[in-house]
Length: 337
Image 1 (cartoon, helix red, strand yellow):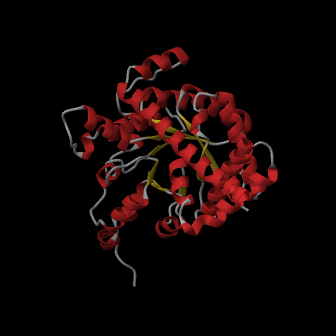
Image 2 (cartoon, rainbow, N blue to C red):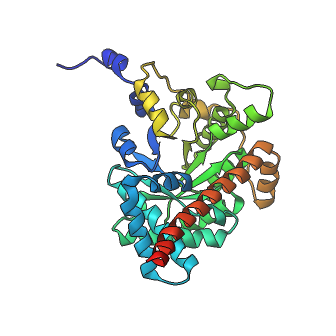
Image 3 (cartoon, rainbow, N blue to C red):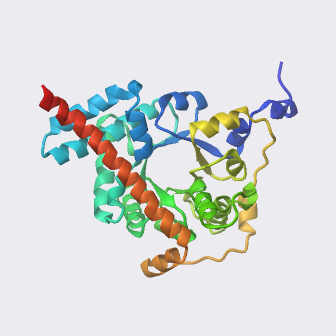
């Protein structure tokens, strides 16, 4: 017997309703969470891979990456770098067995100000995926949204057909530059923006519609839709389900397993808050940013400057920890034999 649409609406969780309006992405390297919540896409970063690589369930992937790095040889540093790239790809390949869409794999944050270095590393990751039978159409390469990162994204998209996901995006200037570069997707951070305002202002809590991170993503979404940019807006870095629900209708939202679980247990009616129609009626004006203008406008946003540099440092620190873990596996065991 079929259930009426009205009853189905009442029965559906907030997560299921969200999926009618927005593409839901899992922000995790944990395969079990991906199996449970069945997202279209998944995103990873150095911090998530570091956490997953320390779980007993994933030790075979680490062992395979270590073996790969050693097989290629070279200096100790080269072997660790090759093992690290391989580990990211092995996780990505396993995730792709569980989702119908794409996985985001991040270029080392230590290259955030090295345009050519990012291009080279991105192409290397795509080659590694190709070696295991995965085409570039199923991969999004994550790059830091520095000026150099955005220009690396421009080259990768236009010259190599490699799809990019611009991460650590906090300012409107970053979003405008990414749109002008023609990248596939941006990840404006919601929770980290809120964190900054809570830490640096008198106000310690915000209604979702007034949340500075939600307002940032809403403005970017409206700008892209008003001026016909094809770049996908994927809200990221959420602190609570209120932020997620306040962005219902956004192109994509990447959500941690903890918040996916909370949404799956909530049964409140969701109404889209973002729409192309409303975006096209907004009063934003189109702007163009060359490098000088980008650096000036981004620098005017104290929150964005501080959170971008902090984000790069944090991801770089986790990349260093991952390198140390791989080094220990690759060389300490060998030395102890």
